[in-house]
Length: 282
Ligand code: KIV
Image (cartoon, rainbow, N blue to C red; front, side, top):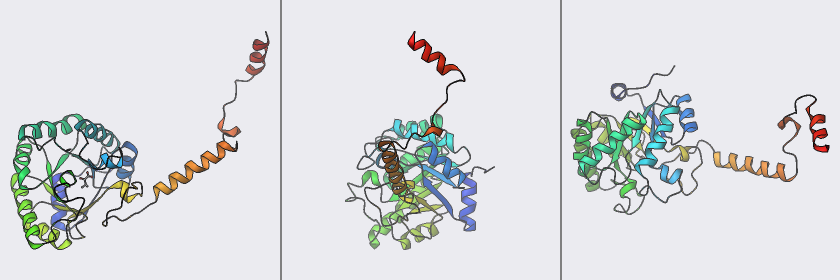
């Protein structure tokens, strides 16, 4: 049976150059498939707002939604390191709120860690959550919850000044007690500098191959999310195509009375049909 990784395993993997591979999952079946496929970690991302609920961004996502989906993923993948994602306004308002909301993920959904977005400005929250005994991952670069300030879903750290800001944020996050850092939509050179600079693992989503591991959004990887495809996505399947094709075939079968066939129906208990006919006559 697969053994769930610990933060120490993740640390050793960085030191030995072994890549960590993880995806997002929001529901029981996807998380079950991820564990069966040997995924190292699962993020129950607040991207569930876009991938499951059809919102335009992640801002409307609530704590309760994140908890319910994290619970389902935990049940499906008991031997995989699961990370809960702190939704918008669950940690920005105050340090006290951040600790309380982080704690909900651990108490109610038994996650192994939580993740939150932002650089130096969320370091007091990271420090307090870590001091509360919880594992916390940072997330810099493109941060969808503040994409309005970033001018949309755009690559970050593309100038020397912007890259220096990110490097400063990464150091501050490590110093605040984060066990790992996720870097999103940043040039590979900048991600490599951050990876070499930090002692904690540095993971990439759209930040090139040299990070300590790679994250992909499962709905992108599977070809389920149809609104847009970020540059950094590699599609491994066309699940939308397969599903639409199956639904179409079912529609045609029913309309043309090919479904249900005899093998899809139940038989009455021997001798009961004549009794029923008799009863209906009488
Ligand atoms: O919510 C999420 O899936 C994320 C990724 C975009 C990194 O935070």
